[in-house]
Image (cartoon, rainbow, N blue to C red; front, top):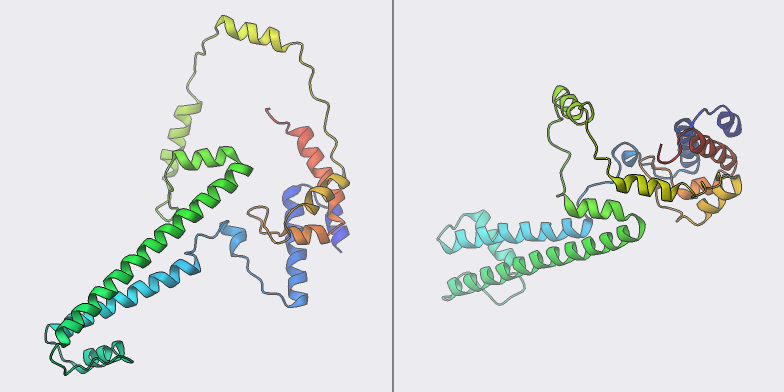
Amino acid sequence: MLVTSLEASRDLSETDSILFGAALAVCRIIGAKISTAGRATGQSSAIPAWRRRIEERIAKARALIGRLICFRSGNNRPRIVRTIRIAFAGTNVSLSQPDITQKLTEHIDDLKQRIAAWGKRIRRYTEKSTRFNQNRLFQSDHKRLYESLERPMVSGTGPAPNQADTVAFWRGLWSEPVNHSEGLWTEFVANRCASIMPMNPVIITPDDVAEAVRRAPNWKSPGLDGLHHYLLKGFVVCHTVLARQFQFNQRDHPFGS
């Protein structure tokens, strides 16, 4: 069935949909956990688990500080007292001892220091993660790295841009006539490059596709399609179709055109 569907595929988009459907069928047959969130939204922007755990500790510590301050101020409601007893469980501190106010103050200061340490840990881990991602991006895509450094990160949760404003903005950029300066240096460069021979056409074969997929990590998604390389390695019959469609795209949409 996969071979028949691939032979009828007209472009890379259809091939991607066919392969994704085949991968989905395989996962259902073997009972694997299926998650299609990344296919529509791209990279997940969820908070990392380690940061979520630290932020939960900070939230609990802040809530406990609030109740400790309430108890120190004379609030003896049963709920507050129960929380204080749990906080001092396993220690020799009794709520009826004379220096309980000092013990409460010391415990509050200790919690504040822990919160500060956890906050520094979040910043340190975030900076380390940022450096790691930037180093990896520098090795794979310089342009994306420099673009991310030049502009701040913008969240996509805001309201969508107005269609009329968007059309007017791009029309103002691309529809206005522009007078380019034609200096003598342009003619010099054109004459100098006239003797450069064009590159020979690149022939993409199924072996090229297989080799490219073979070197890719198994469980890394190549893009928004969410299709793992492991499945591309397993679906050997798709290599011929991909090679033919890559070749077609290269011929009809050459780089720089």
